[in-house]
Length: 252
Length: 252
DNA sequence: CGGACTGTTGATCAAGGTCAACCTCTGTGG
DNA sequence: CCACAGAGGTTGACCTTGATCAACAGTCCG
Image (cartoon, rainbow over all chains, first blue to last red):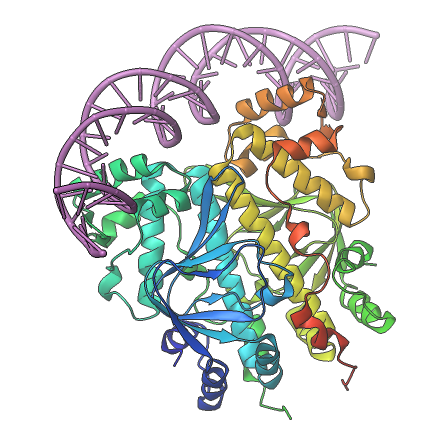
């Protein structure tokens, strides 16, 4: 059951029971993997979309000399990504950070979904726009923020995303990655991430422990990262889309 | 006529004359603007998609204290962007860098297009995937490359994109922005961009002049930026999409 | 018990930022 | 035709952030 996906889409529109059934049907091909499994291989085939049901994963891209950039963290309810199959090969790697459960949705299934229900189509579009907005914020953080601000921003974003899918109470959650993962996401060195986390910790904003970071003070964390979180641009359906969402079902 | 858009989509699929007519019809609301016009205002409404027909524009986002990150440069044939109207308000600003001609496509028109022709829908998806790939590459550049590599990468990307839409012969083109624009795109200072351009120029790779940069040596520029360009992941339709693209027209 | 992995801390270094002066166009108005 | 203003670019001096290198410590495993 793609429970977390439904919770996320709910921020945008409510799916009818029928649409929910269609979605669940599309997610029936599932599999489990250990932490550290390559779910998508760079330059490998990309047939269909993957939906992460449980656990964390990470999308990254590496330069020939080994420098790595983590493009985003993938949380339960995240597609990775619905339109991927229009690319010939993957330009990135996806690795699980914890044990994960994933659904695999073949292209035909996606096309079928959006053909049957324009509202599901809109939901997928919304999800794409959401991902783009996150990616753009990420770029702003890496391009124009200090190390301190970057870390604050990323943890804030992750907290807000966890909350969206009903995980982590009160924007508090545990980050299952290493500090090197954080560093590679933020364009920093692992050493500097360690120092900065330590600083945030000594300021009482975070609790840093082996194998996990916990947000203690959401307010102050927010104050550090002076950048709106993607969700703040996306809640509620805009006027321009209403007639699409209200359109009565007219499919075959 | 969205000539440059057709040229770009051609890298992915050939549109039938009928589909081309639909697309042109959708682009009939056009306008012209001077350089430096705000085409999309941050936090402003987002009704429908804009298609840039002529000229250059720039999408950026600023922090409260004025630090600015240029998210991408928008070239003729670029949507900005087809699914934008699912967001409530814009999280970015779009400013023209030269005099521009743009088409405005209202949401209803887009929905109509993709409903009439699944192939146009696929084309839009492909375009979205393409944009995401560019954005991810941009993030890799800003997060993990040196100033020298970043500039080389960006100019290479722009050259390849200009070529895609039939502008700039042999990957040579003029960049109409300022060095500060480049700096804000790459997470650098204008001063350092100046120095680095000067270096690339003294190495005979670029020709830098007032109000324009020209690529002289595509080969060596490529060698500097050790990262594949987005287009290299996207040429040709992947197998998984064939049955969608081949589907005979069955619309009303 | 030993090794692998992760994180911590200190010392040193370099890439790139900041500041400021100056220069070179270009456009404008007298 | 010249004076001037303003934007963009260049150059040098100096400084800061964060990278690099290295040693070490805690933890988890087999």
